Image (cartoon, rainbow, N blue to C red; front, side, top):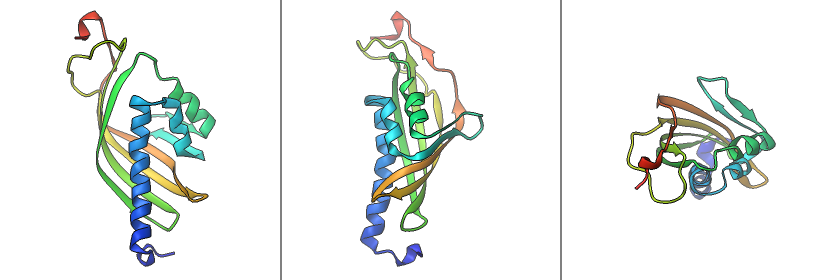
Length: 158
C-alpha cells in the first residue's frame, strides 16, 4: 500500500503511536521498570549499538539485558527532534536525538550535583504493527559523544 493513500487521521494515529513508544522506552529506563522495555518490541525485536558488537534479539534476551541495569543507577534521557516516517500501513521508521545524564551509586536520597551528559547521539528505529499494536522491531543507537558512567561518592549528592 502506498503511504500517500492512507487516510490522514490513520497516518497521524500511527505516527503518534510510534512517538509514544519512543517516549515510553526512555520513561521505563529512567523512572519505571527497565526490563519492561522488552514489551515495547516485537517478539524478534533487536536492540543494537551501531558501532559496537552489542546486539540483543528477542523479548526474553531484551528483558534480561535491560533488567540487569544497576539498581543504584540514576539516569535521565532527553529525546528531541523525533521524526517518524510511515513506510506502509504496518511499518514505520524514526530518527530521534537523545542526551543521557547518568550516574551509578545513587542511594535515592537527595540529588546528584550537575555534570555533563554521559551520552549524546541518536536512535534509528524500525516499527511494525502487530495485531493492531505498534511495536519496535529494531532500535539502533548511534553515539556522537560518550563517556564512562560516573560512580558517585558521598560528596556527589546534595
